[in-house]
Image (cartoon, rainbow over all chains, first blue to last red; front, side, top):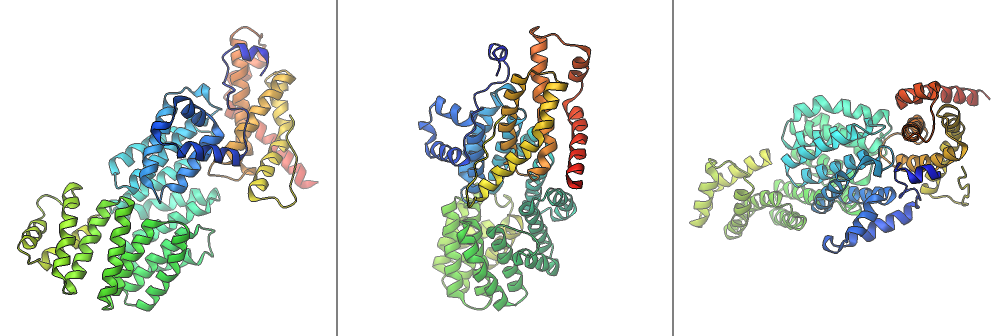
Length: 373
Length: 132
C-alpha cells in the first residue's frame, strides 16, 4: 500500500499475505486441536483474522457436522461472536459478512442435528442477515433455505417441504451445486415417504442411489439406500431391503456417518423383527441404542430403547424390556418428548413398577414417539 | 502484478483449481487495471497494490460454495470497483488528493453499476475471443 494509505487508517492489510491451502489447513487443525481454555487471545485473533485459516476452519467444521454436531455447536458460535465484535474494515470487502453467515449457518446446522429447534431458527436468521450483504448471496441464501426446510421436515410439515423445495433445488441446479441439489432431492423423497407416497419416494431414492443423475457424496448415496431398504421392508420385499442395507453400510462407514449407521441398524432391526428373526433384531436395536448414546443423541436413544423394549417383550424377555423402559423414561420426561397429559407413559411407568409391563401402553408410546420425534 | 505460473507435471485437483483461479484473474487483469487507473484514477503503484488485494480476495471467494471460477468473474469486477471506490473516496476525503468532476461522478455511482458496465466489456472480450 502506498505511504499515504499506510498513514491513513485504510483497510487493514494484515491478511494480505495469502498462504497455501495446505498451510491454512494445518494452522486450522492446530488451532482446533487446542482446548478452548488453552487458546490465548492472540492465538484466537491470529486464527480468526486470517481469511485462509478461517476458510479452513469452516471447511473442517462442515466435515465434522454430521459426526460431531456438539463440537460444531460449540465452535461456530464462538467464531460468530468474535467476528461480530470486529468492524467491516478489518476484513476484505464482503468477508466479514460471509464468515458471519458461514459461522451462523454452521451453528444452525449443528443445533438442528442436536434437536434444538429454537436455536436453529435464531442462527438461521443470523445467517440470512449476514449472507444478504455478500457479493453473491444466491448460493448462500439457498443453503439457509435448505436448512430451514430440513427443520420443517423435523417438525413434520412435509407438505410445506414439498411445496418449497423445488425453488431451492432450482437455485442449486442453476449454480451447478450438484451435491446440494441431491440433498434437496433426498429431502423431497423423505417427505414423500413420510406422507405415504411410497412409490414416488422409492423412485427418488433409487435415482439418488444409482448416482446416474448427480455426482453426490457416498454418505448421501448410503442414506438413500437405507431409506430405500426401509420402504422395501415395509412393502414386504425383505430381500430387496437387505440388499439395500448391505450396499449402504460401507458407504456410511467410509464417510463416518455414525448417526446414519445407527438409523441403518434401527431399520435393519425392524426388517429382522418383521421376518421373525427376533434375536438378531434385538441385537441390531441394541447396537443402534449404543450408537445414539455415544453420539450424545439422547432423545433418539430413548425412542430406540422403547422400540427395543417392544422387541424384548415380544421375544419373552419382560425383565430386559423393563430395564430399557426405565432407562428411557427419564429422557422422555426431561426432553418433554410427550405431553404431560399423555396417559400411556403413566400407565407404562406403573405397569413396570408392578413388573407387568403393559404392551398396549408401550405400543402407544412407541407410535407417538415415532410420529412426533 | 506478478502471479506465479509454476506448474507440476501431474497437477492435483487443488493445483488445477489454483491454476484456474490465476488464469481467470489474469484474463480479467487488463480490464481491472483500466478500471483502476483510467476510471478511478489510481496511480500505477496504487493500482498494482490493490490488484494484489483483489487476487487474495478472489482466490478465497472462489473457495466459497457456489458458481464456478469462470462464472465468478463478474463478481471480481464488483469487488474491484468497490475496492477502488472505497480507497479513492478515502484519499480524496482526507484532502490528500483533489477530485475532478469525472472522478466525483464515478465515486457517486454504486460499484455494482460501474462493474455492470465493465462486465459488458468482458462479454465483448469473450465474444471476440470465441470468434478468433
